[in-house]
Image (cartoon, rainbow, N blue to C red; front, side, top):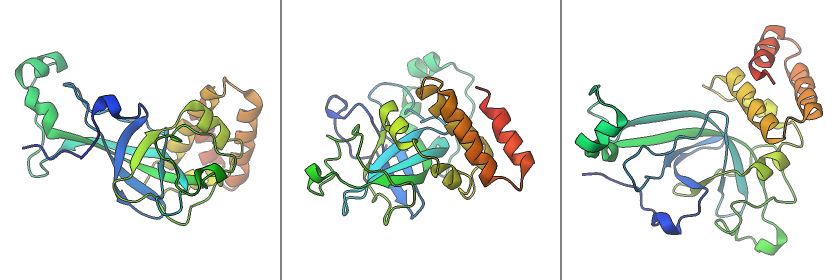
Length: 229
């Protein structure tokens, strides 16, 4: 029997609500993707993409970058096995397969935004999931999001606003257990595209990396080669 996450009906769910926090720590959190209501796999957020959640107590909106994602059986004892079927054939012949899998991802916290004065400290999570806060801090917040907080996909305007400064690059280069060079390159690529190929922004990002990696030219060159604007 499937043990599913408690969640709202699809029609009443915010369109950017993609996951729920199931493990949390000071610098990162683990989230489980919400189940689709059709026979398909849960949406796996791309490597280097941006998500947001909340610290309920302070109302801080937490910004984070996805650095690891996996789809595995809900039953940790039995591994999935190859069936030799296409996705359409699985839907036709083995539809229960989709109810036996879960998709999870880890996201490194890159900064936060305190609640605006109009929020009165409540955060207004769903209503402000796509807000552009007036204040942004690119360092680790006092607390991460709590267990069972919703996780939302950031809209382009939020990402562009958050990345006006470049302090977040230092955080990405220090994520433990992550392929940090590839993560940094993937994140810069996405931001550059969202900024409509803003060349001055890309040049400034490269300058920041050159300062952070001034003693490791090989790593700097590797990251810059992966950006390929």
